[in-house]
Structures are given as C-alpha cells and as structure tokens.
Image: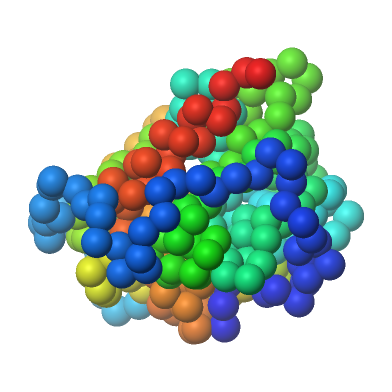
Length: 276
C-alpha cells in the first residue's frame, strides 16, 4: 500500500497555494540531465546491522521529524516531514507526493507541520506551510525518480523552525549503501516509529530500505546517515517515496536517489525561502 493514503486528503487537493511553484527546468521523464559529475559508490556500512529484516520501534525522540496535517491537528496526519538546514532556517523536506498529486493534479493546500508530534500534542508548535516546491517532472509526469519536495514554513512566535528544533543537513550523491535511521508517523499511531538498517540500490535513481512497520502515513520520512546519538543530527540521503510512492508493502521502502536534480530543487527552495 502506498505510504500516503489519498482518500484521507482528497478534500484538500484543491488549487495550489498562491506561492506554490515547481519551476525547475522541464526535461523528458527519462532524466537525461542534469546528472552529477560524481559517481555513486557502494561502500559497505561500517557498523553492524541486524540480521534479516528488523521491525521499527516507537521512537523516544525526534523533534526534527514531524507529522503533516491539513489545516490543524484536528484531523489525521497523512505524511511525515523533517527539518533540513537552510540559510533562512525555515525549510522542511518530504516526498513530492505529500505536497503535489503529480500528473493532472495540483499542490495540496493549507498544510501544517507539527515537529515532535506525539499523543495528540504539539510540543514545538504548529507551523504553517507557506511555499511548496516539487520538480516539474513530478508535477507534470509523476516521475517517481523525483518524488522529493521541499516546503518553506512561516515563522511562529517570531522564530523560524530550525531555530526552535534544529535541522538535519542535506546530503547529495552519498551513494547507494548507507546505514540510515528512518523515523516517521504511521497514520494508525500518534507516536513516531524508527528503524536502522542499510540502504541498497534498487534502480538507477532508486534506493531501497528494509524494515517492518512502515504503514501509510510514513511517506516523507527522512533517511538519516551519520546520525549522532548525542546531537541527534544526521544527513538526509532519502525520504520514503519514489517507487510506488514509497512501496506497496510495509516491510520494504523506497526513496528517489538524491543527486544534482534534488540539489537544484533545494537551491530553488532556498531562493523562495528568503524573507519578502
């Protein structure tokens, strides 16, 4: 089953927000360019990994990861997002299909991000999404290799999101083999789950992650490599999305590979995030 349960948010797939844009250069869906000059590696993980397919456990910490809701927390959270470092400290990253329905559809309107959401509470506030950005090849053709999106948040209480909860960094061309921690919010629970395993190469622009428990709602969950348990900061090398919008089964998840296309989209989001 796709990690985003569209029936839940069908009523908010309205005309896109006035500031929502996906204006990266349009090229054919087979993505002949831009390509990175770096060659992805398959370096083996340096830390021991679980044998077989592990099962996600309830996360005890995760303020940089949060749930996406329509309008406020009175409804059901339908996707996951996380903060990502930017010059203006006001950006989150998620799957493109959490922000835009893809071909023949539009941007999702009236979204809020709730970092550290747990048991119906918003310990770090409810942050309104101001601007959403996906690649035009997702918006126009539902290109699963570009199922990545960024959103700019409005300030809350005079502060920006990263100044309150911190932010992970974006990693581009990190290779197909990394030990990652994946944290997200299944719709069936008001607590986040987390799991550690190694990624593998699924396809030219697709990563694969095996762990049980990633049910609908976990789309957009960040894949953090180099996670520091002391600072609780890592590098985002993927988000649940990509093939089949994240996967058809709860034990196998996918992500679009983060290459120069994703970096270009990030740079555009940075430009859009500048104070007006």
